[in-house]
Amino acid sequence: MKKPLFAASAVVFATFSIPAQAIDVVFDYTYDTAGFFTSDKRVVLDQVAQVFSLNLLDTLTAITPSGGNTFAARLYNPQDPFGTPLLINNFSIPENEIRIFVGSHAFGGQTLGVGGPGFQSVSGSTAFINNALSRGEPGALTTVETDFGPWGGSISFGTNINWYFDSDVSTVEGFSGFDFYTVAMHETAHVFGFGTADSWFDAVVGDTFTGAVTTATNGGAAVALQGDGSDAHFATTLRGVANGSQQIPLLSPFIPSGQRRYMTDLDWAALDDIGWEVASLQATVPAPIPEPRTWAMMLGGVLLIGMMARRRA
Ligand SMILES: [Ca+2]
Ligand SMILES: [Ca+2]
Ligand SMILES: [Zn+2]
Image (cartoon, rainbow, N blue to C red; front, top):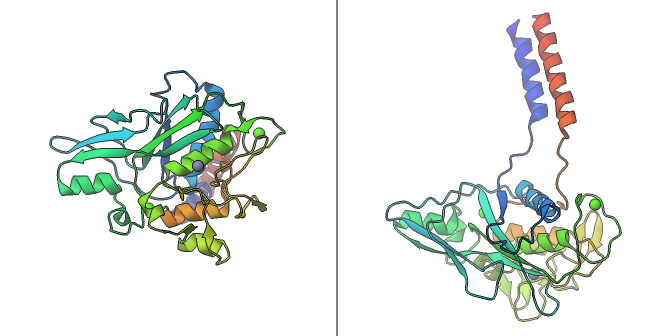
């Protein structure tokens, strides 16, 4: 009579399986020397981290310098992105982690934020160097790159901006000012290589992005880039789909005030073409996570099943 108990357990565990969180996006406040990131701002970034963490399923190797294998992270200073880049010697990063250093800066003009992946100085064995430059993604080492394995990067947010911080981005209230969630999602996509990775530029021809998934998502039509010389953004004439509605892609160069924008299917498709294993082209806000109370009820159910099975045995 042991078998029925086993079967019941199997059903229970299947119910409990939650998606593997492949990428672990960690926002790092080490260089926030102005103390910009109060809890209301960190709450928004936590939600940004969750969307990328749950929707990108790659497995990235760790970078662990030791002995003759050295690794130094180079990055734009999030407090001064146009100044001297920062250098972090003896930098290591755990498996699957993407570290994003954030800060604030008084930009001139209308800049809301800037973001991008970091760089590195690496020396040692060929195996160590190749791993550090690819994090185990072979396509990041080919002449025409088809993948991207950064350690992370940096984002700088404007200090002279009338920001709106939404503690729960799954609901949209009327607001004035610029939506921090929208801008943070946009800049984080730049850290993940949108408009910045070699695997992005290897798919740029003229002022179009020729990635296969993006082109298919665009109905087979050429995917226009904003013709501003940088080839780092989608054209504002494109339309993607987010939450079932048409929207200008999040990775177009302009974000209006008073508006929430999401990653559209075109934005995620581009990350897919850059080399990320994108779970869904429809991800917009953090996936619902069971409340502690719900977990308790589910655990109660498990215990009940267990006891019933035992009694039956
Ligand atoms: Ca809300
Ligand atoms: Ca990949
Ligand atoms: Zn941008």
